[in-house]
Image (cartoon, rainbow, N blue to C red; front, side, top):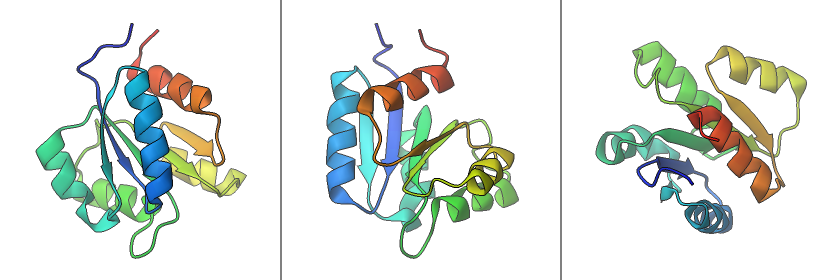
Length: 126
């Protein structure tokens, strides 16, 4: 059984993706907060204290790569596991994400069970 205290922050500019992801993850026992404004990620992390950040790569104003690069430059949230989910299925982007400290890279459209499996892997759950 999943530890109910595991909190996940999901960032995506697509409201439908946020709703579907929140529903699926809550059904698997996670506490989920969603955010559609990539400019407010740090503020939300400070307030919510998630155990995992799931972030879309392609968003207006600020991409998932921008967010992670900002964290790395500021040396913040290095211990916060990160999963990218995106429509970009590029080996180069996957390698760059890994080099930036992203644990998993999931391509949309994704199978919800695959997302849950990736989350369990990243959080060290069985």
